Length: 246
Image 1 (cartoon, one colour):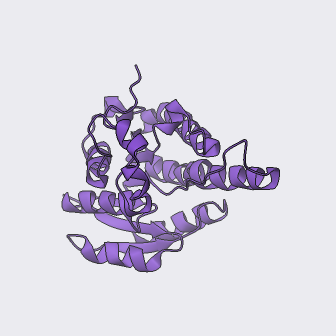
Image 2 (image 1 turned 60 degrees about the vertical axis):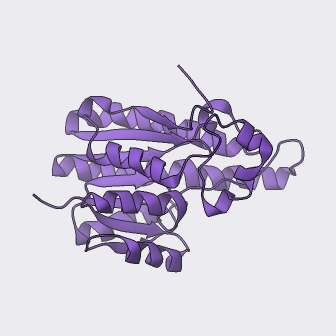
């Protein structure tokens, strides 16, 4: 059986590192993308089970870098799975943020969270369709459904990612390329360690805690490796019933 290769963006820590580990445990060869956290990405790579894992650097908010990255990947190996995990969450409350900061935050957030995944998925879709199949898993957020009053650009970018993913699922299904979305709520990572202990945040968690990175990674791994073709286009919530929709 040929070993599967997966590109995971934003793989230097937190959810990205957990996704890499979960898929490597299943036998996948991981290409770990990072923007600036090379040392952290290297540490994640060293901790992965199995062999053949590698690193790749790019600023995916720059639209010129996605095709360059994919061209470099194509020279290495066939990529079977793309996990678009990289993203940013800058605060910019509408009533207290200046207009210059407001506009720059919107531009940066949409470039990183929506346009970056869209451009990389474009490259992946063409390649996967030609090779006879593949999978794309996009990491969204419950914020796409409930809103983020302190970070409206983030919520909008993730809502856009959901719609883009479903459009892509329809377009690519006939070519054997399947697209899934995983939408976490709060996740217990070092970046938000203080925030998730806030009593107001905990009061909003029926489980009494935030999701673990490993729990999100388990769902991503399922989508990437196990989910049936008929699930393409699905958006899977991983928020501990903190936000329910029907």
